[in-house]
Length: 381
Image (tube, rainbow, N blue to C red; front, side, top):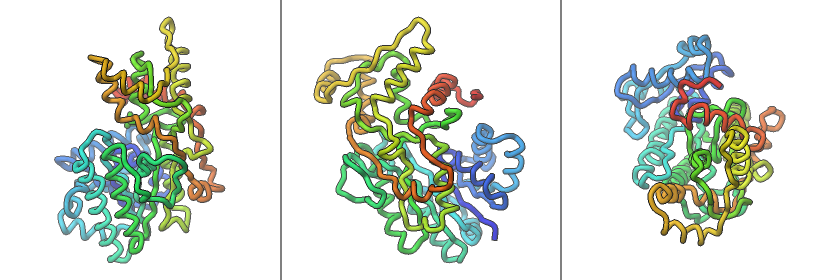
C-alpha cells in the first residue's frame, strides 16, 4: 500500500518545508493537507502560493496529482471535516505529521490551549480512528524544545515534567500537549520532535516566519537596540529550517526504531551559539553593508539595572522594552539541549546541524531583501 500522509500546519514554517521533502523522497505517496479557509478555492490558493516559493513549476505540476487539500480546522470536532470524509480518510491514512501550532508568545493561555492542546487532542483522535482501521504506521508530533520552560542546565530528550515554570502561554500549552501525547505513546506509534529556535534556510535564508531572534535583529538594524539584559555568554540554541525538516523526515520515515522516542532538533551543547555571538555577527554584517552609518556593539547590562531603566523611558523606547520582555527568558536562562537520540539516529545520513556563524549571512541577506518579511513574496535569493 502506498503511503497516505496526513499533515497539519502545511502553511507554517515546518509544515510547508516538509511538503517538498515528502513528495520528492516518496514519489508514490499521497499527501493530505488540512488547511483552514472560508472556501475550498481559498485553501488551495494558500497552499500553492506557498509552494511557489519552495518548488519549481514542474514540481508543483507533479505535486498537484498527489496532494489532496482538505478544508478543515484542528480545533473543531472531526477536524472540521464532515463525518463521511473523516471516516473515509481515516481508513486510508498510514502516517500523520502534526506540526500545526499557535506560536504567539503574547496570547492568553486559553487561546493557546485551543490550538496547541485541544487541536492536538483532535488530531490524536484521527490517529486512533486510523489505527482502528488497521493502516496507521506512525505519528509525528512537532513539539518545541522550550517545553523546558525556564529550567536551566542541560535538558535531556527523555525529560518532560520537571516542575518547570514557563515564560509564556506558548511554552505552557505545548508542554501540556506533549504530556498528553506522551501518555498516548502506550497506544499509538508516536514520535516526538522538539525543535529549538528555528531560523531560515542555511543556504538561502528563506523563511516565512520572522519570529524570536528576528525581532531583536530588526531593532538592531534599525539602530534602536542599544542594550540587552544578561550576559553575552548565555547559550542560544538556533537551528535552520532545512536541518529541522531534513532531520525530521529522515528520522520519521527512515529510522526503524524511532517510535516512542523524543528527538531534540537543536544545535545542542556542541553547536549552539551565544546571545553575544548573534548580536556581534549581526553588528559586523550591518557595518559591512551600511556605508557611512556605523553600528556600535550592543551592551549587555545586569538584568536588575535593565528592569530599573525601563521605568524611566518613554515613547518608542518604552514600546521596545515592552516587546523585548517576551524574549527575556531566551536571553537570561543558561541552558543547553542534549541531542544524543538525534545524533545517533542521524549517524551515517549526512544530515548534520551547523553553527550559526556558518550561515548567518544568508539569514540576514534574506531579511534585508524582503524587508524583514514585509515583501518576502517578491524576493528571489
